[in-house]
Image (cartoon, rainbow, N blue to C red; front, side):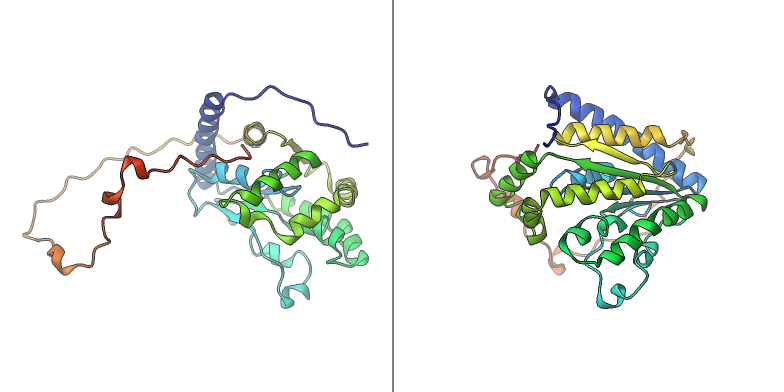
Length: 283
């Protein structure tokens, strides 16, 4: 029997927006601490398809410097990568000093989709379960701050989100054949996840489960937990003084008639032509 997630009161949108902005300001503080101290942070996002991983990542990185905080979302491995040690292609994307890496799916592909869809052999899967804790302990021993989040969603909510994507042109691209296959293999994915947790939910790198029936609540909960789990401190900012603009030396701008300018498309718009603002049906 599948346990139903608890019903929670709907979060007011103004409360959500205000708290999200406050947390995003704290994420900027975390970023500055990472840069100043040379810390290295890896955040792993895993979970069911349509559980809200991408939306959480988008809110985390919205105001961060893309040179510091980068998203790692790897495609299917190439023929050459399939012959490498399994963790090898992920190592190339680990952070250097002063960097944050957010893995939108990670080496845990082998514990989930590869296991269920038959993309790896049983021996390869068992080897992954044995080696993964050792791999993660090595990262932590070397000083990397590792956080792992599993976004949990019910089968009913997942199916609802998949249906909304069928008619939503902004999100239809998110429906892949593998995503659709997950609908018919719900219990297989559940068993694979349970087995994966048994082997990889280690004291040094625990799995943090995010209840994601309500995407907005899940984002706030996940970001707040991340911030509370890292002992960052406020980094004083150097005072910045804008320099005085020097006097002109006689430069004159090139005549507009000699430039190929973009047409003023905005001038053709009227109030009647404005479409209603896009509202994410999954929110």
